[in-house]
Amino acid sequence: MNDQRNTDRTPRDLLTRDASARTEDSTYRPPSLLPEVPDTDTHVHRWVRISVYGESDPRNMSQRRQEGWELVAPAEQPLVSKQLGIKDTSPYIEIGGLVLCKALKARIESRGEYYRRQADLQMQSVDRQLMKQNDPRMPLLKPERTTTVTYGRKA
Image (cartoon, rainbow, N blue to C red; front, side):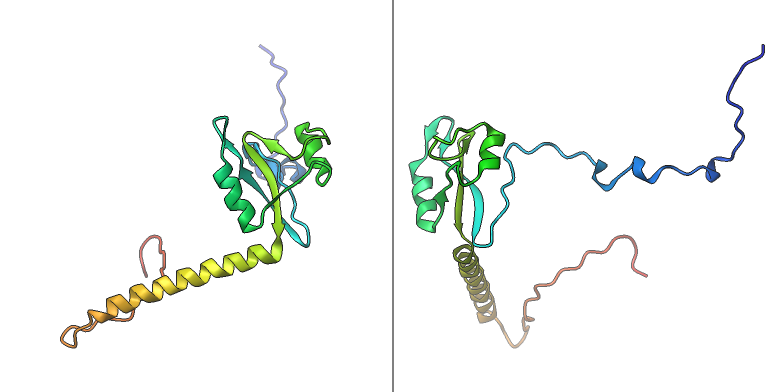
């Protein structure tokens, strides 16, 4: 039997793989159901619930409008509306019970700062309650808020 096999005897460690064969973006990510809308210099975009299982949710929309969120018209985001197949005559961009809204970036940042301050005040309150129970015979240490994660043995 005379097989005509590939008789290239080059060692495998001398062979190199083409660098373009594998790129950083070759990892799988499931497709997003909602298109990403880039933020502008002045506005932040977010998808807000307008209905659940076909039932409208006016309470949620009312809350979001009070927070400063406004509906985005298809003319304002032509790429997104074209991607979703929404006509320019529609009053807003909707997909699966969610509408695209925008809010002023400064307002959203101040809202985030408000809730950070609220969380800090709550933590201070918890610490004060804990320290009220301090006894000189068995003093409590000041609470630490740092955590460390180690893997394997400590050397």
